Amino acid sequence: MPLGGRFALAELPYAIDALAPAMSAETLTFHHGKHLKTYVDNLNAAIASTPMEGMALEDVVMQSSGALLNNAGQVLNHNLFFSQLRSPRPDNPPTGRIAQLIDEQFGGFQDFQAQFDKAALTLFGSGWAWLSVSGCGTLAITQEPNASNPISRGLTPLLTADVWEHAYYIDHRNSRAEYLRALWTLIDWDVVNLRLD
Ligand SMILES: [Fe+2]
Image 1 (spheres, rainbow, N blue to C red):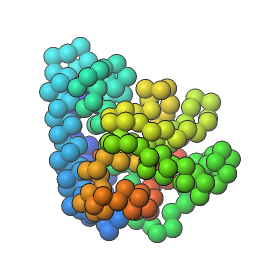
Image 2: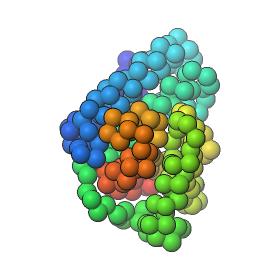
Image 3: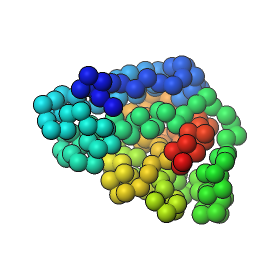
């Protein structure tokens, strides 16, 4: 929500070094403190004095286009991305209701992971892989280019992998696959379950 008419950089819900070594403090310093900060600043500049000033971020994403949509989308995407992470656990299977739905609809976590990784790995250029849920409870894995978010397709986003190179180049250089392996150890399934509710 805008504070005083402006969107604020969402604080990380953990210490800057809490995700190491899977995601280093240096990566977070750049990815959150510089890349996301720039999207927030550009969003505030683009929305100033428009009829959308004061709207909720999701509404701006649903109703805008061009530079405003790109920056609002990136702020929403990154807020969902950073808030779904916590300290690494080598063995980190889903829990609760999302585990049940994944088992029912994908035949198990490993099969789901393979499909999600394929979406993330085959996305050409910059963008996001998402797990979302439809209004009737059907899970969907989608590839979204650039700043897109599945809310534009009427889906509720649950989990995402940022596959812009800025998400992984410091820790994993050009290896998107290595980054994804590290990312799975960081997913906070409690947050995913809250989004499902
Ligand atoms: Fe990013």
